[in-house]
Image (cartoon, rainbow, N blue to C red; front, side, top):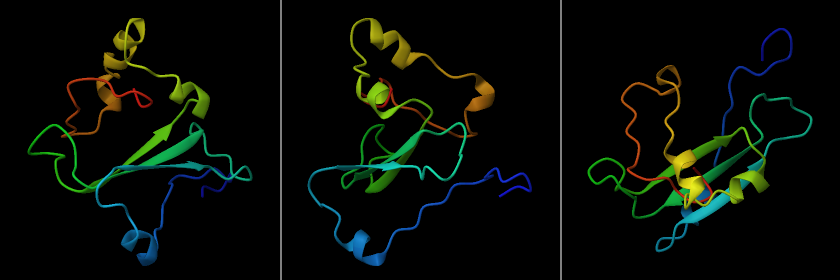
Length: 115
Protein backbone atom coordinates (compact mmCIF):
# COMPACT_ATOMS: atom_id res chain seq x y z
CA UNK A 1 0.00 0.00 0.00
CA UNK A 2 1.04 3.51 -0.64
CA UNK A 3 1.54 5.95 2.21
CA UNK A 4 -1.97 7.31 1.59
CA UNK A 5 -3.46 3.81 2.09
CA UNK A 6 -4.17 3.21 -1.60
CA UNK A 7 -3.23 -0.30 -2.75
CA UNK A 8 -0.72 -0.32 -5.61
CA UNK A 9 -1.08 -4.01 -6.39
CA UNK A 10 -3.62 -6.81 -6.05
CA UNK A 11 -2.62 -10.39 -5.38
CA UNK A 12 -4.33 -13.76 -5.38
CA UNK A 13 -3.22 -16.84 -3.45
CA UNK A 14 -4.52 -20.35 -4.10
CA UNK A 15 -3.97 -23.35 -1.87
CA UNK A 16 -2.64 -26.63 -3.16
CA UNK A 17 -5.97 -28.21 -2.18
CA UNK A 18 -7.90 -25.74 -4.32
CA UNK A 19 -5.64 -26.39 -7.29
CA UNK A 20 -5.97 -30.16 -6.88
CA UNK A 21 -9.79 -29.92 -6.86
CA UNK A 22 -10.22 -28.11 -10.19
CA UNK A 23 -12.72 -29.60 -12.65
CA UNK A 24 -10.96 -31.41 -15.48
CA UNK A 25 -13.72 -31.47 -18.10
CA UNK A 26 -15.79 -28.29 -17.88
CA UNK A 27 -14.48 -24.75 -17.39
CA UNK A 28 -15.18 -23.17 -14.03
CA UNK A 29 -15.98 -19.54 -13.18
CA UNK A 30 -15.39 -18.09 -9.73
CA UNK A 31 -16.44 -14.53 -8.86
CA UNK A 32 -14.54 -12.84 -6.05
CA UNK A 33 -15.98 -9.74 -4.46
CA UNK A 34 -13.26 -7.40 -3.30
CA UNK A 35 -13.22 -6.77 0.47
CA UNK A 36 -15.48 -3.84 1.39
CA UNK A 37 -12.89 -2.60 3.89
CA UNK A 38 -10.43 -2.01 1.05
CA UNK A 39 -10.82 0.76 -1.45
CA UNK A 40 -9.26 -0.69 -4.62
CA UNK A 41 -10.16 1.77 -7.35
CA UNK A 42 -11.06 1.30 -10.10
CA UNK A 43 -11.94 -2.38 -9.51
CA UNK A 44 -15.42 -3.57 -8.54
CA UNK A 45 -14.88 -7.35 -8.60
CA UNK A 46 -12.75 -10.02 -10.21
CA UNK A 47 -13.52 -13.30 -11.95
CA UNK A 48 -11.25 -16.31 -12.20
CA UNK A 49 -11.95 -18.67 -15.08
CA UNK A 50 -10.34 -22.11 -15.03
CA UNK A 51 -9.95 -23.39 -18.57
CA UNK A 52 -8.93 -27.09 -18.37
CA UNK A 53 -8.64 -27.34 -22.17
CA UNK A 54 -7.77 -23.73 -22.95
CA UNK A 55 -9.53 -21.68 -25.63
CA UNK A 56 -8.84 -19.82 -28.87
CA UNK A 57 -6.68 -18.49 -30.41
CA UNK A 58 -4.97 -21.78 -31.10
CA UNK A 59 -1.27 -21.95 -30.33
CA UNK A 60 -1.53 -19.20 -27.68
CA UNK A 61 -4.25 -19.91 -25.11
CA UNK A 62 -5.19 -23.51 -26.00
CA UNK A 63 -3.45 -25.02 -22.96
CA UNK A 64 -4.91 -25.45 -19.45
CA UNK A 65 -4.77 -22.10 -17.66
CA UNK A 66 -6.54 -19.53 -15.51
CA UNK A 67 -7.99 -16.32 -16.92
CA UNK A 68 -8.01 -13.52 -14.35
CA UNK A 69 -10.43 -10.68 -15.10
CA UNK A 70 -10.66 -7.46 -13.09
CA UNK A 71 -13.84 -5.46 -13.70
CA UNK A 72 -14.55 -1.76 -13.30
CA UNK A 73 -18.30 -2.40 -13.74
CA UNK A 74 -20.74 -4.09 -11.37
CA UNK A 75 -21.35 -7.83 -11.50
CA UNK A 76 -24.91 -7.19 -12.76
CA UNK A 77 -23.58 -5.03 -15.62
CA UNK A 78 -21.02 -7.68 -16.52
CA UNK A 79 -23.63 -10.44 -16.59
CA UNK A 80 -25.77 -8.31 -18.95
CA UNK A 81 -23.04 -8.35 -21.64
CA UNK A 82 -24.32 -10.43 -24.57
CA UNK A 83 -21.91 -9.53 -27.42
CA UNK A 84 -24.93 -9.81 -29.74
CA UNK A 85 -26.91 -7.22 -31.67
CA UNK A 86 -26.08 -3.64 -30.69
CA UNK A 87 -23.96 -4.94 -27.80
CA UNK A 88 -21.56 -6.63 -30.26
CA UNK A 89 -20.02 -3.32 -31.36
CA UNK A 90 -19.24 -2.48 -27.74
CA UNK A 91 -17.65 -5.89 -27.21
CA UNK A 92 -15.40 -5.46 -30.24
CA UNK A 93 -14.33 -1.90 -29.39
CA UNK A 94 -10.61 -1.84 -28.69
CA UNK A 95 -9.21 0.04 -25.69
CA UNK A 96 -6.78 2.89 -26.18
CA UNK A 97 -3.39 1.48 -27.29
CA UNK A 98 -1.72 2.67 -24.07
CA UNK A 99 -4.11 0.43 -22.09
CA UNK A 100 -3.08 -2.78 -23.91
CA UNK A 101 -0.08 -4.66 -22.46
CA UNK A 102 2.86 -5.38 -24.78
CA UNK A 103 2.52 -8.69 -26.64
CA UNK A 104 -1.18 -9.08 -25.70
CA UNK A 105 -3.15 -11.23 -28.15
CA UNK A 106 -6.93 -10.95 -27.98
CA UNK A 107 -9.56 -13.25 -29.39
CA UNK A 108 -11.42 -12.60 -32.63
CA UNK A 109 -14.82 -12.01 -30.97
CA UNK A 110 -16.27 -10.74 -27.74
CA UNK A 111 -17.27 -13.16 -24.99
CA UNK A 112 -20.70 -13.00 -23.30
CA UNK A 113 -20.48 -11.84 -19.68
CA UNK A 114 -16.92 -10.65 -20.30
CA UNK A 115 -16.85 -8.23 -23.21
